[in-house]
Image (tube, rainbow, N blue to C red; front, side, top):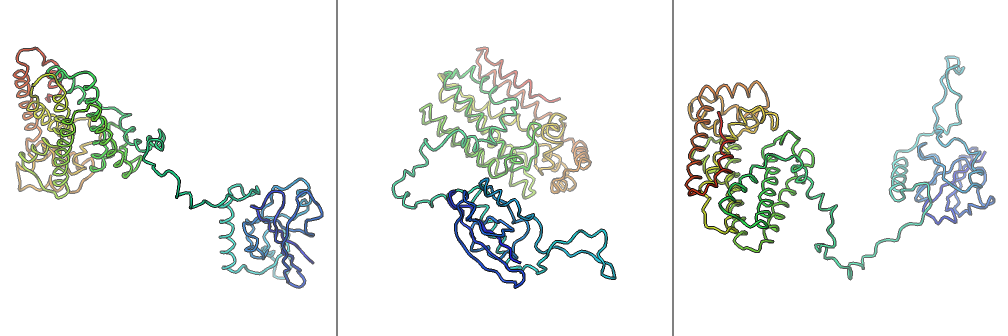
Length: 468
């Protein structure tokens, strides 16, 4: 008895079919192999007694029908005549190594056993099986339309690199789709806006500085870009989970892409400043970003080394870190302003008030708990203003510093830490410091105003920052 397996080469031109025919004589266990081409429109070209048709990228690798797994047996979408020719082909999914039927003790097949198919009953060598698997994977990867016979693409010409324009930094190669990829984390964070405190502060100070509208628009935009991108970095460094009640960007886009996006926006902001054609603005920009990173570096150092700073060290850190962006905006305005008013001392004071109040609210406000998580500063292990006061009020008690060391998310432990800080008077002390600084800022604003009646915006901001 003779059977024939036809191995089709799918990448041959569509007017012919390249094949390798393996003909096996079951009585002699022999395999005869031939190769050739077929005209799909001709009935006479097909080999006789075809039992399987198998597509393969390289027919030379697939000559032995006994080594093919059942899943490799496929029918090709051929011409109508060819399909008619194949109508009598056996089921291609029937295994050539079928399991023999179960029999009773006297050798009689059981009634539940399926009708056995003819079996070769020879195990497939592992090496042949692996080679077939690799050949099949190669065929599918090289030809996405597996059953469709198409001509292969020509290989790329390396000589094109000798003459093609390779200036990919030119604007022609950058488009909106690529821009949206790089800006993705930044666009995500600005889609959940905050209270826009910095824009309010700029508008309040402009009552004194009177910056031309085009310059003020650029400065406001630059400060906003720097603030939002710095939040992306902060959330990564603090291992935060929520920002304004939404998942942090790096938990959506990944840490690497988020950091890159934040740094990218820093330089996009710098490009915006160049539009104002004022070299002083570039100096202010670089100076205050240096200060910002100095402050952030010390804050991270204390946290990661479990070093409790003094209040004076803390105030210096805040002046660099939080005050840096506040100061940057006001200094940029002053450089573009029509008057000589020096607002830096007042904005430094507002920066201190803002950060100390933020530390207080993080440990006591339900709104902060919703937007950032309950007492997130404790989970971060941060030496905030109330924490510093509490630790230094009783240096021999190591409970709070050990809680910081754990960076716990346990609600009960956090509640205990808050209770402990209340017992040391740290929240009351923080409230008093904030309110004293607010009164000092009010007086400074009146002195700066010199009776012009332009303090309304600043006074409104200070009213919002008071804590009870």
